[in-house]
Length: 356
Image 1 (cartoon, rainbow, N blue to C red):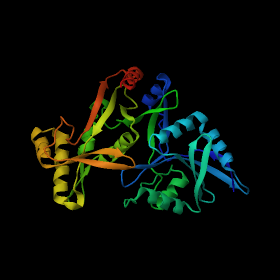
Image 2 (cartoon, rainbow, N blue to C red; image 1 turned 180 degrees about the vertical axis):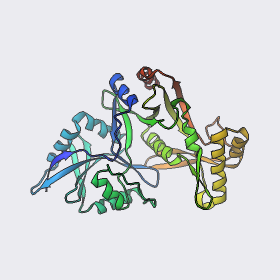
Image 3 (cartoon, rainbow, N blue to C red; image 1 turned 120 degrees about the vertical axis):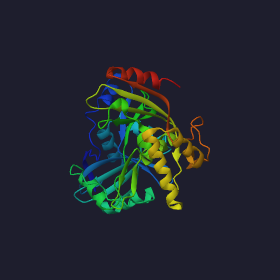
Image 4 (cartoon, one colour; image 1 turned 180 degrees about the horizontal axis):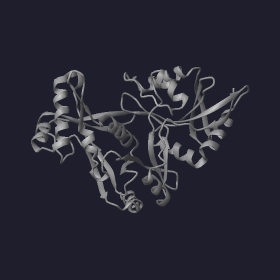
């Protein structure tokens, strides 16, 4: 088969209203790109950095050079070089996926440089490709995926098949030499006031829902932040956070130092698991010193450490402490809340990224 009409589709929502990203792009001299898919497996290791393009097909044959040249035209050589270099930070090549809705075929290529491209695999159904994603993840979600009408057909079929396209990386930062220098997480505080937004409150499970039997379910951000910490630790890149809102000129600029995760026992001891979650929930809401002390003297945490090719969990047993950053929290090396001065974000960001 021969490929033509390469074009981009995404399962991610548009960030056109993100004034914080727009002003950083315009006024810092750095480049801010996204990666469409990042696969983290059940061993907490990034295995694939993935981009994709929808194609049409006709009878014939596309050579590897044809494919690579078409991808370069679609992405732009500078953008593609930055994405290749970003993948190298994880000791990975860039995986590039081509797919055709009309036939539901998928082709996978590996790109190591602007002159090196290899054909890796093909799948005759979207279901088969979904199964491959599940195999590199090492697990399948048992929860139903939320369907969105604006999703591309490709994504709808993958979700119905049991394993969705991997989550994206919102933004990575590169310098003028195409070298990655950081990862940037934008957080839209549309449901709270920007300056009152606190990542640790969500991390610890500030909000709770109750099921039909009256049992609590704590809405924490542990898994989301573990995903971010995997990126930071495995790549060795700095992790920045910008909190913003569409109708506010306030912002918070932060750099993550390290994250200590609660060592929840899950099925080993569901009673103790619930006690730990309840204590974190209480602390997120009232910052009670007695609650903190109960956690410190009775529960464990862990941090991530990467020794290629494996990610390790380094456990901290009680007593925990904020001094050695073993208490379950996101710890920052920099945090700055700015009220009503959106125009200062580029200057502060440049100052921060220039620090060693």
